Length: 248
Image (cartoon, rainbow, N blue to C red; front, side):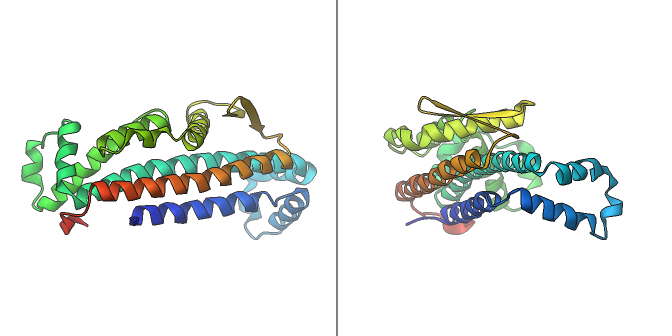
C-alpha cells in the first residue's frame, strides 16, 4: 500500500532522470547547431543582451557544453532535494488529514495553540484544520540536512528509529544536500560531492565523462530513494490508518 504522495514522488523523479540523461547527450556539434538556429530566430534582434555569450557559443562550443553540464547538475541537485523535502511535508499532511489522533499529537509536539483571530476569520472549521496541519508539517520537517529532517519525521510519526539508519541512502542524500546548501548560500564555482572517502569535483570545465559519472550516481540514488521512501510511506500508513477521511 502506498499513498498518492509516493506516486507524485515517482512521477517527478522519472522526469529528473530523463532530464539528466538528455543533457548527457549534448555535445559541441549540438551547441553549434543551436547557435546557428538562434541566429536565424525571428526574435534574435530583440535579445541583444545575449549576443556576447551567443558569440562565445559559436567560437567556443566546448566551453558551453561544460557549462550546460554544470548547470544541469545544479538543477538536478536542487530539484532532487526539494522533491524529497516536499515528500516529507506532503505525507505528514496526508496522515494528519486522515487521522486526527496524529493531528492532535502534532499540535502538542509542535506546541501550537489556535490563534484567537483564526476562530473569527475562518468560517469553515476544515479550512482552519488544514492551516494548522500545514504549519505542523512545516515545523516537523525542519533541519539543515536530510538526516536531521528524517530523524524529526520518524520521531513525530512514532516509527522505528532504525528506519533513519539506512546509511546507504541517507549518507548519500546528505552529501547531495550539502551541495544544495552550497548552491543556495554560497557564490561558488565548484561543487563537491563526498561519497565514503572519495571526493568528486564538478565545475563548468567538466568533461562528458565527469557528467556521466554524476548522472549514473544520481539515477542510482533516485532509485534507492524511491525504494526507501515507498517503504517509509507504507510503514507510516500502517501506523496511522485512515480514521477521519473528511479532509482528504
